[in-house]
Length: 165
Ligand SMILES: Cc1cc2nc3c(=O)[nH]c(=O)nc-3n(C[C@H](O)[C@H](O)[C@H](O)COP(=O)(O)O)c2cc1C
Image (tube, rainbow, N blue to C red; front, side):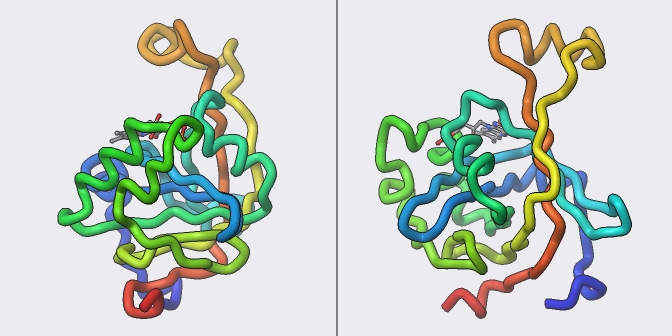
């Protein structure tokens, strides 16, 4: 799909419908559910930004790979996304348990069931500066765990469902 054809609903796509962030290659990867994210323009490039806590197993794969994917799913896959967002790939084979079928996308991975997958080139990954995080966010999210990484990916391809078959 051409970038110009993509109709975005960034406020509901992440918050209400959720997405999977996947990093690694087809032989060694991990995925997790996110509901925080942004789409837009940075440094004159089309970008997707996700916010990943350093404790997530997926963070290790994001740190050590140049590409990652953000993929969106229909409501029928809600249960799989809930599972992938509550279990860690560190402790269990949650991907097999979810029933989703991994497929290669560029140098990264997505799932056959995705409606749309954004293939992203990682162009920035760094944690929020603790001194600049507003007090309300500190109290809600960072009392016990370190600040999220801001992970910015340049959109290099949008893969639609039929291309995964
Ligand atoms: C609906 C939903 C949304 C989530 N959004 C985020 C998010 O935006 N950022 C984040 O770091 N964790 C988020 N999580 C938590 C991770 O998905 C969860 O900790 C997951 O088990 C991490 O898996 P991993 O350790 O295999 O990477 C979310 C979980 C759910 C259920």
